[in-house]
Length: 397
Ligand SMILES: *Cc1c(COP(=O)(O)O)cnc(C)c1O
Image (tube, rainbow, N blue to C red; front, side):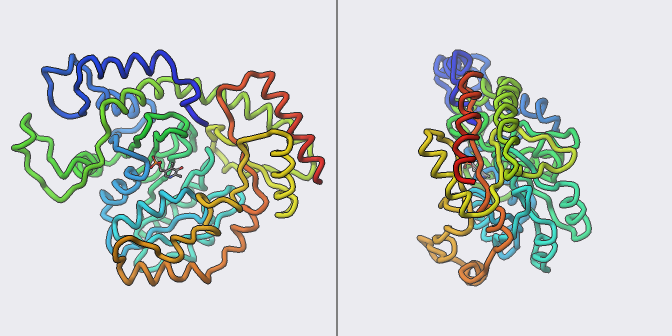
C-alpha cells in the first residue's frame, strides 16, 4: 500500500516548485508564487481522477472525516454508526464534534454488517460511516438503501481504499461525502494530508470555509473576509500538497503494481483448501493494498502468524491482537480516558463498550490475517514470498 516506497524525481520536482517560490501556504500571495498552486491543482486533479464535482484538501484523513461530518450537520449528541474494525481515527473524528460513535459488528467483507447496522439505528442516529478497510469496500448499495429509508447520511471513510471502485465508481463517491488520507503509509502519500470529496455543492462550500477558520474566501484580502459560521484550521500546506500531486499522478501505476503482486500471492494461497478469502461485494474492485484471508479458527490464525514471522514474512497483521484497529484493545476508548471533560451523554454511550461483546466481529477478525502488498517488490521476490507463505501456513494446519 505505501506510495512512499516509490518516492522519486516527480515528488522532488513538485516540492522544489514550492521551495523556489517560498510560498508554503495554499491561499493568497498570488504575485509571489510563480504560478504554482499545488493544493488547488491537487484538488482539481482529484476531482478528475475520482469523477466527482468537488474535492477539499485538509491536513489529515482524521480531519477529513471530522470536516465531512461537520458539513453534513452532525454534532453534539448525534449518533454515527461505524464498524468495530477500523483505525482509531474514525471514532476520534466523531468524538471531536461531540457526536457519539456507535460501534457495530462486521461481516465477512471485514466491513459493516447490514443487520448489525439496522439494529443500531435509533432516533439519534444521523449517519452511517462505512470504513473501507484494507483496500476493499463495504456493501454500499445496501447501506445507501438503509440510509434512504431512515433519512441518514452515508459518509465513506475511504482512507485505506483510494483507487478502488464500486459499480464502476471510485470509492468515496458513492455516499454523500467521502474521505481520503494521504498520511505517510497510505496508498498515495503527501507526508500528511487528507481530502473530502462530494458531489453536493453546499457541502463543498462548507468544507472549503470550515477547514479554514470559516473564512468565506471572497475577495483577495484575507483580513477583510467575513465568516458565515465558526470554523477550525484543517488546512494543508503547499509542501504537502506538492508531494500529493506527484503521487496522485502515479496512483494508477501503483494500483496496477499492487494488483499484480496481490494476484500472485492470492493464487498461491488459494491452493490451501483451509484458507478462504475476504468477501468483496459484487460490483466492487478493491485497490489491492492488502490481501486478507481467513484461517479456520483463532488458534490456527495465531499459529500462522508465528509461522509467518519465523519464516521472515513481515507486513502481515492479525488485527485481533492489534491495539490500533480493532475494538477488543481500545481500552482508552472504553475507559473514556480524556484529557478534558467529556459530555455525560458520550461517557454513558462509551461506557457500554466495557461490557458489550462483539462475537461476530471476533469470529471474523480472530481468524483474519491481512498482508500488506508492497510496491517495491520484484516479481521474483513476490513469487518467493508466495511459496514461503504457503509453506509457513501449511505447517500449522
Ligand atoms: C489512516 C486512516 C485515517 C486517518 O488518516 P490520518 O491521515 O492518519 O489522520 C482514518 N481512517 C482510516 C480507516 C485510516 O486508515
